[in-house]
Amino acid sequence: MKTNKMPVPPEKQSWPLPKNDYWSTPFAEALMHHLDLFPGASVLDVASGHGTPAFHIAEQVGPKGQVLGIDLHPAQILRCRSNQRTHLPWLSFEQADVRTLPANLGPFDRITGNIAFMFFRPDRFSALKQLVEFLKPGGQIVLTFPSLGTFDSLWQRIDREMASRGLTREREKLVEYLEERPSAEHARQWYQDLGMERVEVNEWPLEIPTGPGEEFLFHPLLRGGFLEDAYECFEDQALAHAVMNTIADDIKSFTPLTALRCAMAAWRPAE
Ligand SMILES: C[S@@+](CC[C@H](N)C(=O)[O-])C[C@H]1O[C@@H](n2cnc3c(N)ncnc32)[C@H](O)[C@@H]1O
Image (tube, rainbow, N blue to C red; front, side, top):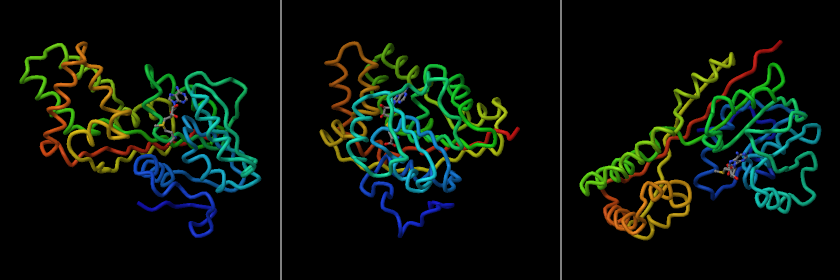
């Protein structure tokens, strides 16, 4: 996928998307593919984490622009400020919850959020509705998230293992977890329900390599973001470990592991 509409071309960028990040960067590429940036734009980047893509966007909008990154966790804000030092002074980071942003923020020309939309729970539609209020009329919002279908081969393998062991309650919890995940279809429908224009929702597959055993069980991405959810389906954690160890020794049955990068873009109608 190539990025487009970039005021600062790749060869002149001091703040490209991180090259060695095999998770955030591919999602951010999907986001940038949709984002229509211009010098001087004001941008709100929600769930900014360690600053992908806030730093990159700040370079693109230049000193006449303004970029605010917000994240729930103060440690992320401190890390970004410390990496920023005195660079890009039109970029700032503040601690805030995307679901309850202060009313005096913005409005912004653009709103972005990379690997962000799943955190809009429990009522993602209401959270999206509130967030869109911070857009200027005619402004654009682009969010990304791993959509429904992400790592399905793994969830199916876990479900089969639970079924073969007669773990009915654990299976129900797994189904509950899987059904709660947002889909590309949700994204499209919600934007339409909000009266947004030029709605574009796209998904791109992303393969995540893993080896067997501990390489799988302690995979930095899978463990924190996904496997913990599988463990939470069990009340008995010893049983959870037994099931997950069996799965970890059988990776051939569910690899390649494929995530779906979903980018959801839309424009607020001009008044
Ligand atoms: C998967 S990381 C993505 C970070 C960054 N955008 C990136 O692409 O690397 C998600 C971030 O969302 C933040 N987050 C989770 N829930 C949030 C909320 N309700 N409001 C704001 N940030 C939130 C987390 O602290 C974390 O830094």
